[in-house]
Image (cartoon, rainbow over all chains, first blue to last red; front, side, top):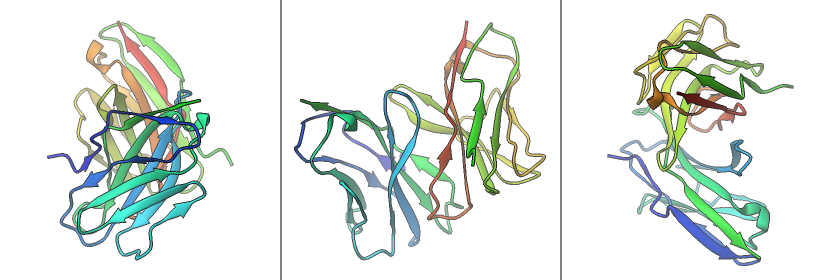
Length: 116
Length: 113
């Protein structure tokens, strides 16, 4: 079974609008970390945002926020005011604590296209 | 501060050839890893290491070999290349903790003919 599920292979959004990229995860650990990475067409992997399982508030980094719903095991990425440069692949990842030995696992990614 | 240096950026091999992808980091990270990225499959873990002298298999280890003789270096060896190993390869490193982000190399586009 996949530990990280990203159900949206592709998403489209109009420039300046907000978009939510879905991520659900599966773990029996109480302690874990959730990450989002961006991969533009140039190919590099860029870290965007982190949420710890014990963090009570949703993480925010500029226009990025992570909508963390622990009971639902979801960690959706919200991009506000989309820009053309946000067009990229986005990967959700998890590092589990005790049971997962901190080895990161990745989802299959969501391709986001921002239209002008 | 160079971060994670991965070479080469591009490589074409013939079936049966061997080669080594190089990865070096200068951040004193304990954790180093190799992923392959294929369309629609995300990043799949090939091998990883949590310190010098310690390596372990990931999700897709067959056909690959690694060693970690120093903290800084973590080369990936393709023993006898196959077309199924055509992929984009990433080296990544971090401190070994659940809240540490990965630092990635720039990737290697490998084609096996």
